[in-house]
Length: 160
Image (cartoon, rainbow, N blue to C red; front, side, top):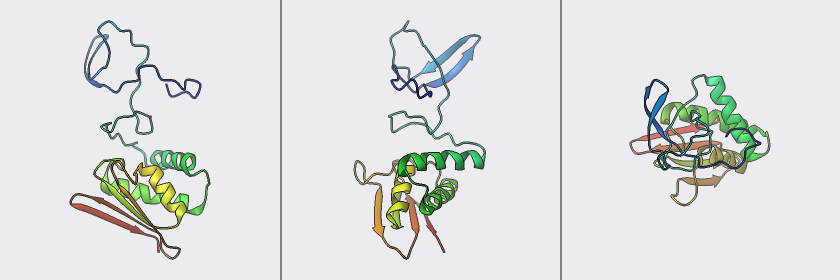
């Protein structure tokens, strides 16, 4: 399903692998009728598109891989390789180390700085202005800052 030549997922479903018994996989959470053939099984990665707010957070192991994934997502979202895009990727890498899953419902993001920085950080964190509101932006040409907040935690990243 990750190939660009297969844009229409057929009954895509996120499941939990409970156990493996020989050639049989025991799953929970499969949205199918007994006897329905399974066409393909793939492991889940954060950049996969699964439209569920409760998807697991699986972080790429290598920092270079994390940076490359974020850079690719940032370019796809922002559409311009400007300096603020690269700054946003660095901020996201730092925030991920301290805050964990950046797409979490309880993580709020405030960006003070350029529109490019805000756009890129909003795209990478998937924070929205509404439903639920998790994103706030204040334009300021003199400052580049992101403030990440979860209950009991706050991280402020400022470019100096």
